[in-house]
Image (cartoon, rainbow, N blue to C red; front, side, top):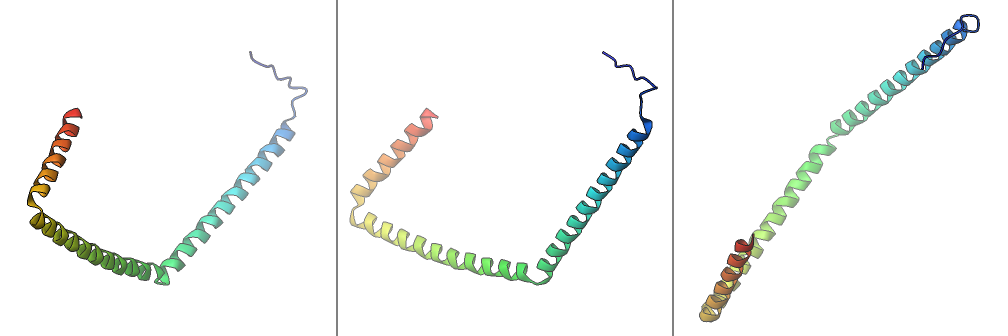
Length: 111
């Protein structure tokens, strides 16, 4: 359904004013977004320039190396305990290994 615009009541001047107001609001929003983006970039640049990022990465690297060393030591201890248990109880170890293998085979077969 089309509406018919009566040229006698059509207020072109009002539409021009509204359009100019809308244009001004858009320009203001554009300026605000530009300022926010520039401020964010400055903050990121300042953060990176202070060297905090590289020191944080170095700290994380050394912490990971420490954890890897602890994990390696724990793994070695577990292997040593397992070797001792297998040596002390070879038949029980063989039975456990067989049971774990049979259970794994059942699970794989069901999949």
